[in-house]
Image 1 (tube, rainbow, N blue to C red):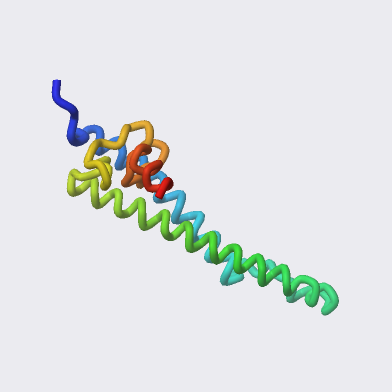
Image 2: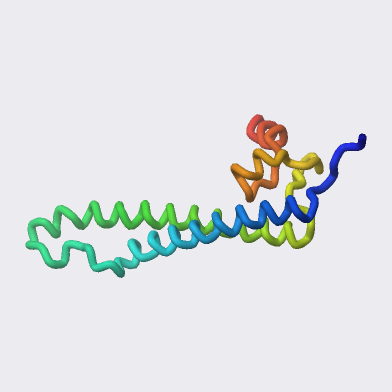
Length: 127
């Protein structure tokens, strides 16, 4: 029996459902982070005394910086998921970009935007 070279349409639909669920959750999380950066929830120190405001300014700046970094990371995750959907449409989803072999289903279920097999990822980390 020859080695499988691509996933079936039914398998691709299974992965599409996983990706769409993760994409929806990721977009929600991104909006929460964006709102905290923009301070749209109004939960800040503007209504407290000046003493507390001085103490909180540093923490507020640090918190916004951390939220900004998390938002950037979340956006990268969203873009990865969207790219995975394109690969599903092109029927190239699940192929390792280094080895050309199929990435195991277990890995794709855990990391649906993966473009490298575990083997390729480990080789990449060694370099």
